[in-house]
Amino acid sequence: METTDQVGATAVVDVDLRADSAVGVVTFSRGRHNYFNYELLEKIASTLDDLRDRGSRAVVLRTTNKHFCAGADFVGDGPTGPGQPHIYDIVPRLFRQPLPIVAAVGGAAIGGGLGLALLADFRVTTPSAYFLANFNRIGMTQGFALSLTLPRLLGPQRAAELFYTARRVPGEEAVAIGLADRLAEPDTLDDEAFALAAEIAKSAPLAVASTRRTLRADLVEKVEETLRHERSQQDPLKVTEDFREGVQAWREKRVPRFRGA
Image 1: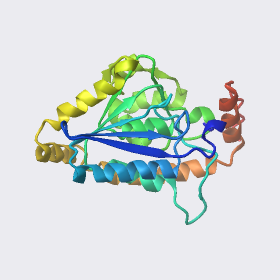
Image 2: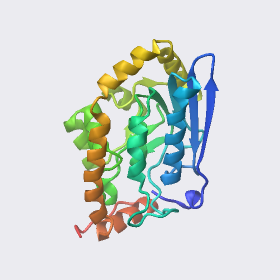
Image 3: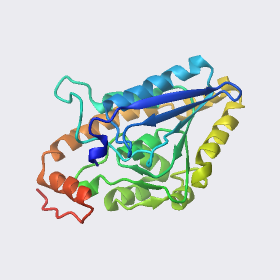
């Protein structure tokens, strides 16, 4: 949820190509909490699109900020009206990029930030990190194709529980239930994520690409369909009193008083 730290914040995406390991390390940043907007996601997508041609065989997606990503920037600093670019126009590009991604998830992955973490093939996290699908708690329905990716990863029953209750899943539990893949201490998070990406990069690149295409064969098409449905559900909710109350309550760190209107 938006706070003053991201108003006017600059979206920065840097890449470090590790030629000795064929791993591309992509570091993104936008304000202290990494609230994403169209600009940030477009920069991440463009960077990922380019890495295979620059010799990378696997990618680490990381940040140096407090949180991996605290969700969407609801303040909005770009055009969002009819005919204008929408965040969901970028999301299929992120899923379509060609290389395996290992996300280094420190701090929090909240709302759409959870969606960003789940587009990666693998997640390395820490005991102090947490994952949170907070949509229903702010009067909104899930987005960023989480209607598809979270049940695909955890099964429909566990995914529904996380959506309905909006409870935090700490790092250790995330690994135990399959929401994350490896646990590291905060000061070794990036090293552990890089080590996993480097192991992937040692495998035959054509074989990895073929395996990944097979495993994700219908994913992009379903992501696009899911995003269309999620947007059709989200747009009416954005004008409700419950959504305004949910956003305000989240800012004020209090229990929302929903009226069903």
